[in-house]
Length: 77
Length: 359
Image 1 (cartoon, rainbow over the protein chains, first blue to last red):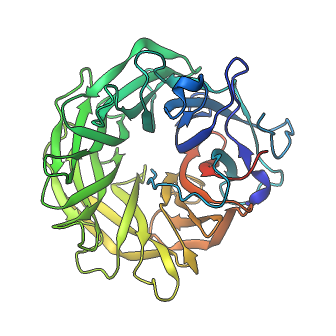
Image 2: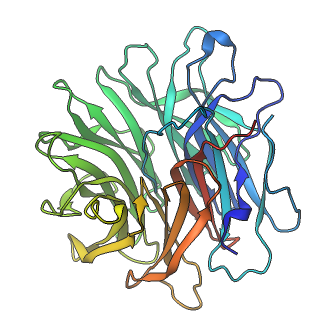
């Protein structure tokens, strides 16, 4: 099924850092050996106040899951 | 693979996040596809402390030989406003390779907005980017990475601005196609999409106007992908030729390299002509049903008036396959999609920038 019901947030903030403030400009590439993707994006807000306004490049690896039924939307924080 | 556009902030929502969808290639799978992360977010690179600066505009390619990713981005390490082009290798498991980023190019110029394509034939990459020159115009530069990082070279430096490059590699011809938004000879000139094809060494360059200098309206924010089965690429872009009727639309053009010549193949393709403001598209190719056709299909995705749309395009004759697809119609603004086809799971991964409120 194509459709809007399968949207999901890409990011999960690391437990040890403040939550992200902004995430923009995603890119991704596919690893056919493992059947997963690396999503990379620009992100800011993970470090302390003196760093506010500075962007970094962050990423997360995702894999398809054909059995586990996740919630449609994951709460950010 | 994807174009980039500045976000248009709306209302009080300033928190922008990323959303994704996994789409079965033909809509025939009975169960919705699910996807899981293999861990939390990780820093590909972010200086903090003494060297804090902005690292932005990432692009990524997968290296099947090393089983790792190469992420390219720009940074303004010295705070001068002049950006450099950098890269970090990431293992398949999400670990940095090495302790410092690799410099692709760090000069006195302002180099930014890199895009990268993998050359599996020659075990290399081409990185392309835009450079703000001494008279504050933008040019397109590139660099081949093989065993070493090659010297940067000019791809398009004529008068006016050349912006927002994208690049894809065709294995059948062992050539890259670089495309960009071209404001020759002046910024005020209606932009068109221009392209250059280069061999694996970045040499033997051939140029072609993808949209034609006399196309009505503005053609901007190109994205390119390759047909993995043959000698073609598909270039897509935002187009204002119908601004008085359907607003901004998405058009495309097949490009071939055959008999040693870069050429347009067929006519311009109206891919997404819907009422609204279509913006920067992304495009990818997949051999979606090889038992039916080795030529596969392209999928083009783009944001338009709050909805993320998709359109399948036949990989052989470039006709549209069925109607437009709604990838996401959640009530939010969406920008900068990216897309890739997963051959093993036979599905399209789509990610985009989204300002929905997570509270």
